[in-house]
Length: 67
Image (cartoon, rainbow, N blue to C red):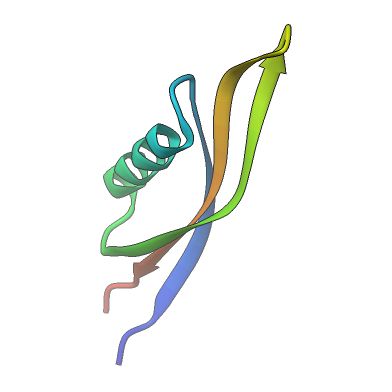
């Protein structure tokens, strides 16, 4: 039997939502062991002067707890 935990993180990129997701998962893997999945809970953009200046995602990261 395994027990998993979900934690929430926010990641921002100036390039794209995809880049923000990739960076968030990569960073989560540095701090958490046994990451098994992630899902995008929310997305938003920051707009300045009518142009998108950043992309932000809120990720829910699932990882399995060690015995």
